[in-house]
Length: 220
View 1: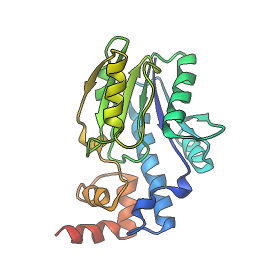
View 2: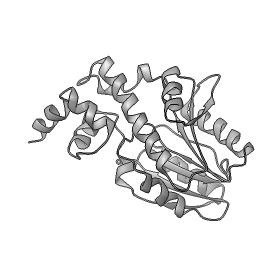
View 3: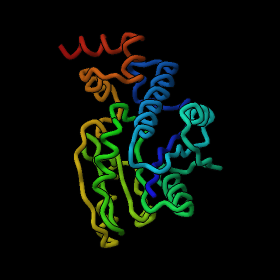
View 4: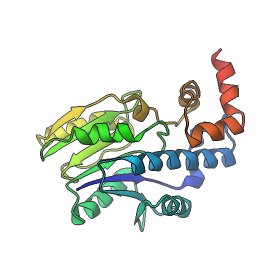
């Protein structure tokens, strides 16, 4: 069985690096929109058995329930790596042979991107990695079995995950997938996103508050 996890922290404090161009209420709204786009893509995957949000945030739980995505409820949040490793073990106990971890802030992701990764899953033990646009972050990681090596999310996580795989002598493949690679953390990410008109809730919300038009003008 193949499971997917989306770890979510406090949405009320999300995307503070976007504060130069978005108010707090706008940042919260966009964080919700991005999470909805990601969960909708997961829901459209043909090859996933189960999909989970890993969180203790009440708004994320409400959105997951709305989209009929299951929840792994945390009792505390120390780090993203701890959250992912805790929930990966829960998934393994539920029968997951592999677990795909996807961030909640990559709104361009589509079901076919997820299925691209899942169709390339190898025999156990193995891993698939998708780097962020700057190749510092890890924007998707599929591990088989789910706890084959520990998570190292945070700065330079892509290299750290590769190092963990090599340390455990785990075979891995790397794929550059542009829609997954673009997570929105900073104004420059938002500018790139604005240049790619998309049928996403995130794009529509940014358009409604005039950010798409504002950012697009700055690019011309």
